[in-house]
Image (cartoon, rainbow, N blue to C red; front, side, top):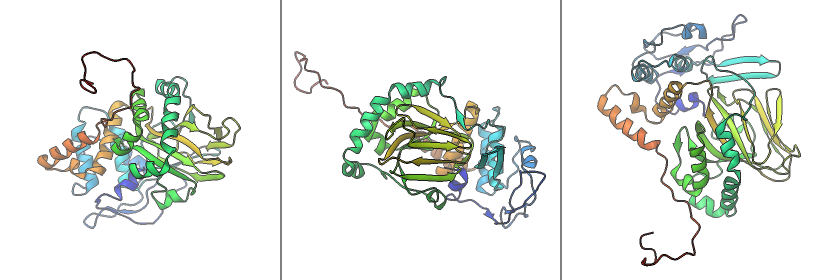
Length: 363
């Protein structure tokens, strides 16, 4: 989910003014933005202006939510180089949209943008250990998934927001043939749904994948997802193909920029969805994948922690509070929020009897 959309659900003291500023000499232009009623109007500011600012000194209005978060970022990560994350937060505050043509047919659009990251349509997965681990455990994931969707009524009754559709008008414009079943959102596990897919959840956790979001996604027969961007360049998207109708027959395809690939059962793909992309299912059956949003490989560990902190602030605004007591309570809540749920997987029963144990005792 783009940070901009999340901020709209958080108390933020600025209002965007729908006035575009065009420039032929630079693609880096902000729309005119009124930061707050007590501050001056900011216009004709380039991205270079913001990026060139010292990232060790706050520049955003201190009484705004964005300003408080910026100050806490600088204090919390003192001594670590998170300059481009601070730049990203500032760019977001000034309503920057990064639009770039990488080459003919490959266009990037990102409102949540970290400067300096590699942009490529598809990333090769052969050398990524977590990709190989997921492929190795494909059968287990597929079997657990098929068993769960075998009784959709039970799944809907026990699960949380099962097969949800579009969460925004922008997303609904992509097409109506897809829906999701969430296991993790912005680094936070969904305890209810993880309990329904304990094996899959543990496999993903044990794989070491730098996951930010995790969910199953379905795509109806004879449907398409229209050309769009996911608006965020610091997370890539990965798919483990779970159940692809007529796998290998090229009926289910994904196009990112000028490259098109088909989903193949049991294979992992990795691509950049800040690049304009679309998808099609030309089969007469539903397509299912396990979808992951993962941190961009160029990000350092400090970058990842700082970006996760931003997500957490949007979930728990008191993390940016100037009051130490409020901040402490918020930090405790955030720590609990990120713990992996304690779920039990069913074990095969053993016929071997153990002497001296009553039924169920000591097990």
